[in-house]
Structures are given as C-alpha cells and as structure tokens.
Length: 84
Image: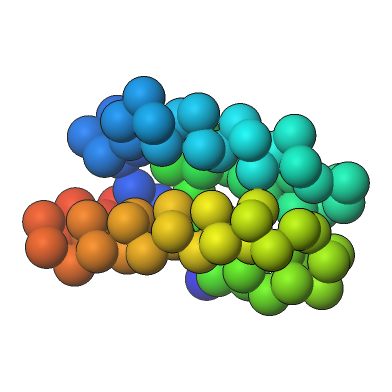
C-alpha cells in the first residue's frame, strides 16, 4: 500500500488547512499537487516528501510539507486512528 488513510476531520486545524493550501499553491508539479490535495481527503502518500524534494519546491514549502507529514504520523501513532 502506498498511502495511509486517516481522518482529516479529527486532526486538521484551520492552520493545517491553510498550510496545505500554501503548499498546493507553491507547487508547480502536478503529481505533488495531487498528493497534497489527497491530504484533504485523508490520504497521506508514502512518497509525498520524496516527490516534494524531487520537484524542487522552495525550502519553506518543503518544511511545511515535512511538518504536515510529522503531525499526521504523530496523530496516527498517538491515537491509533488509521483506516485500513
């Protein structure tokens, strides 16, 4: 499986929604943009960070994506709220 399904409504704050949109707007790569939109549907793709680095987004956007990934993974680890 190349993604983790999570409940975005339980996790995302308005700041996280805003950060995700900033990342989407800062992306010029279709694949990266598509996977970032997936966060709104509760899909964390395993290769999201790799694609962000390969697409050479600004370091600020790269750091925002890393922060979102860390928050999602921590949420899943703490709450054990992962859909299979």
